[in-house]
Length: 321
Image (tube, rainbow, N blue to C red; front, side):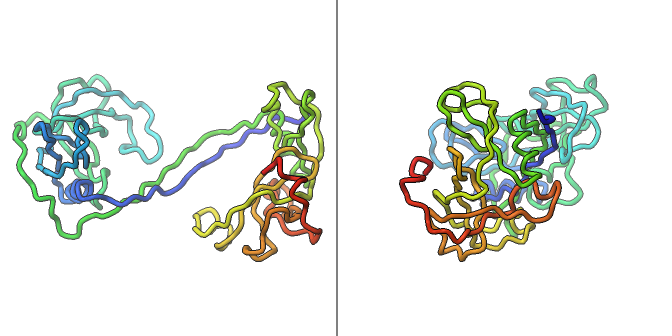
């Protein structure tokens, strides 16, 4: 039995969204060292502001300015900050009700240790030196023993020069993936340009990639079966939007991503189709894998290309569509 593999993996993408008038005013205000909230129909002031009343669901745009000082309502100590968190040294996550607000804002509190943090302590905003119109324009909160801000928020038009109309937030997940016995054997075989699945002892179906158990019968699988390498396109889509990872690999749009039923397999896997104009890819097209390079970098086929064989009859793959 092959060794079980393990490797660090990263899932990362930029989350992009446009801003409505309320969120635009809030983030633009932070850039200008101004904290805005929104007043609901029953008179509460929400900070951060929302565009619809959480009670009535009616649209709300009554913007008001609140103070940069406030009170900690609850907190939790973070002894080991992670990458891209607000502070590099240990800090407290706090919910702060700013003076004049009726709800609390989540952010970081710069404090020397957990003994220096308590519910009810007074804090103020520490503004970032460079501000762009994002929540990070608040660098953090810091302890404050000065006078409280005005308890009654002031009306605000929400109008600023060069308002922020959209944001891009990077989303990233770092984790260690251990695929288990069955998929480790599958990945190891790919290094030798072989594709192996496992057969269910009950229904006799061959699953690729193998899962270690039959998803239909629920019984363990152990019998390895080499499949393919050729297969049949069952379904496909044409991709017209360029993603960062495909651009880095030199893949230009449009391109085709397909489900491919490998010969001898009872489950279709997915892969990119190349070597044929995108508008000529079709269901039933016979394809084969193309590996590029050798060793670790060739653990998966780079893409699949037409074999030149006649198209497969629909009845031979209709159960895998």
